[in-house]
View 1 (tube, rainbow, N blue to C red):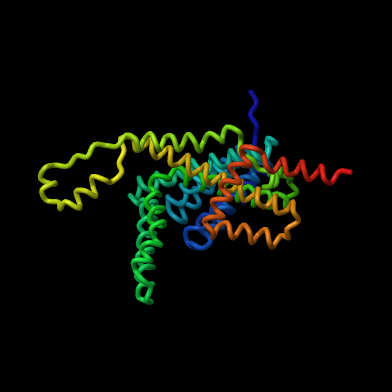
View 2: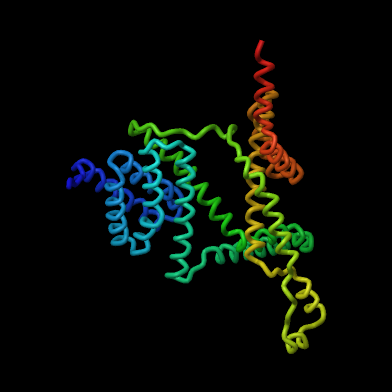
Length: 354
């Protein structure tokens, strides 16, 4: 039976890069502003180790980095490396070492990042009892109330301000039910940024990593077209099964009639999990179709020779104008169903051919 030994060069690089990972992680806890940058930088040394020397060296370096960070910044700092940076860096390095496609690497990293985010949330809640989601919601509500008071003191009509902030309140109230969607968005965003930053760093070491296809060619799979109708059907099914209105007799006597009416007409359902699933699917479909609509609008404007500044202005208006936002959503839906961008490119190629 033969045993594979780790080369001295791999151990040396692993020790140096493990110290870098620990340094980046500790800096993230001491310097909050640097936390965002370190979140995308810390996995890179482990990715480099996997690509150059294999997963064993990277795992050993991750353990050493966690021990160093725990000794300097406390046990939670070491756990951040084990739960967040190490899985993401090693997963990305493994996909690059095995010559997987860029899309496969992105999907794997997105899944790992989402699981790591859930693990961090669960660990934070279990150890300290601190719920970051609930704290964020309360901070958003408090900030909204402070903004209303501030503009009221400036002379603005409070009733109009309350009406304008109604949509924001709805978004805040939805947040506890769309945590799965937020985790998915966080995982994909983290994976994409980390992938692009890692590619940039690897090029400095002479390592070529596959590039993602241009955003203008991104498409949703055909099966994704069912996401929106299925999500809407689940929400409708959950809302069609309201929970019975039950209050103790003593409580009914204590409450005024207006409060009883408001409670009775508050929308409830027997199947809150089914409603949350449908809501997350519907919002995911709307987000994807809106992104596809922005890409399709960019390609369409490019086809007709619109200058780049005009295309950027059109995209900015889509974010600030609700009617344009709705139009972008339907454009993305049509593009996903009928491949509008492919048709436009074919027509442009036919026009250009003699």
